[in-house]
Image (cartoon, rainbow, N blue to C red; front, top):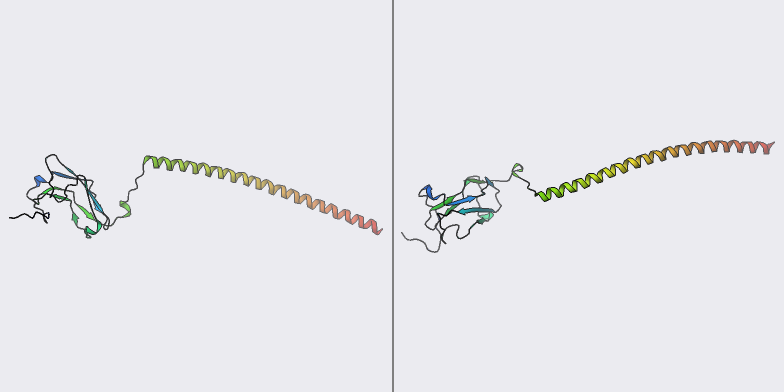
Length: 176
């Protein structure tokens, strides 16, 4: 049987499972979003020496697969490290390609970001309290001014009444 020198094998030979533990796949997700790039992380054990013609090649820690190369169905897949002879040297846990759901989204923040957000929140709370205090003060000032206005209007009405009476007296004196 003649081996192809220029191209890697196009299929894997599953001789036995003892070779599967020679390459360990790390951080394999349960699901990947279709249309997104996938990064494959793996570790080679001491018992395994990679060769130049292995499928994943000379990359030591990761291989990135472009989105257009990935399957579009919801079947289960595995990352496999296949050597030059087509022997599977490592296989990942099974995973699927499926759209991301809202429940799968995880927001990660650093401690620094949390502290920055808390500081900003404290500043906003302080500003909010200052605005509330200012609002209470302005409402009291408005109430005091309304009372002063009411008092001045009553004084004006009293003075207008006195003025009217005096004008009436002056008119009566002129007429007499």
